[in-house]
Image (cartoon, rainbow over all chains, first blue to last red; front, side, top):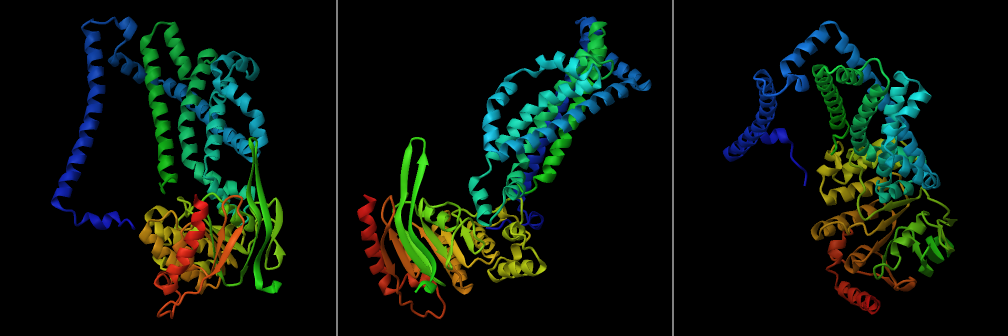
Length: 274
Length: 261
């Protein structure tokens, strides 16, 4: 039967139900506090171990000096330059990868013959570690931002094609038949059922994709660049400045987490009906 | 007498081909349906009942034979035909109103007038308050009624029902089959229903066509005449109380039984 409106029910909860809600809230709070506790504890332990010389800061650096470095780098603005460049490259790679990958998936769905013909090529390309193509891409697309974006694109594209296409194929064939009884054309079937039914799958693909794009960006920057977070990390490693390496990794972690969260927001907006 | 045959199925045969072999599903099957009739097709499971509906709907082409609807040969899907499936196939991302309008959307017949008509259909059949709801908020029986209205929205003359109640539990099944038979009668539609439920077939239809096991062919056709008491309104549930009901049931059951083994 019809589920009643939640707000209406709120006013007349029984005491035992209120008790239940309270315990759920407390449990959640406990989880959050533990999560924060682990982070703080780890940083504290690291800092203390470094100060008391239990560990060699030449190899491990320490939280306070990483923080100081980030402060210095943001004062002269260079941290924003490096982050901005990497974020830009990752987003461009991600957007092109998603659009191009989805378009190719639509093409494969449209013609089964086409899909069957390209199947072995896609399987091989999917299994191949795309990082191996890095040097070739750099030579072909140039040792600059273009090469890095193409690397990011190469890594994310095949995964996008395969998982989007598989999502299209999993759409209930009876639902397609239902539209056919109304006389639907292939384009209408794509538009009215296959595409909307695949949106949750496509958003999941995007979540994988954003990680893939970042791998591409960092690898590309390791290979060629003169700026970006990948460059910062490699440079830090080369001059044995572990605080630079750690700062780069931390900012990278923040940037990827934020982008992942944005896609999750997108999900809750588009998949309300679930 | 051809004018009387609204649907004329003429000696259709169907052979399915796969790599490992071929299966003959239908063998020289013929029957006809008059305008305004509800006809049920009953037969052993797997005998090709759904294939018949797919052929009438123009989704499949028979290997031989032809089907005429209103004296026109079926060739591809036809806007005069509405198809209703075992499960409702409502789109979870569309609300009830948008779900019901999908057929009109595909046939590019959306207009203020057609939307108002469909909206009125929902009101008439007790779904008026749920237009903005999403399918997951409705019960199975309500969803199946929405599916019927989606089929009716494009104003088909012929309805094809493919075991439309088999996904429902027994109580809803009785109630919804009663509702849907009433809706079909009051909208003056012609309907062909495939079912494996003998009681449902007898209570809802004017005629029951019994098929043999695969390859299916028409075994016998029963004209159903039930004296429903207090029948100011057609009601399949009340028809189950008719004295002849049991008689038809036994006859069809016996005929079927031979082939179930």
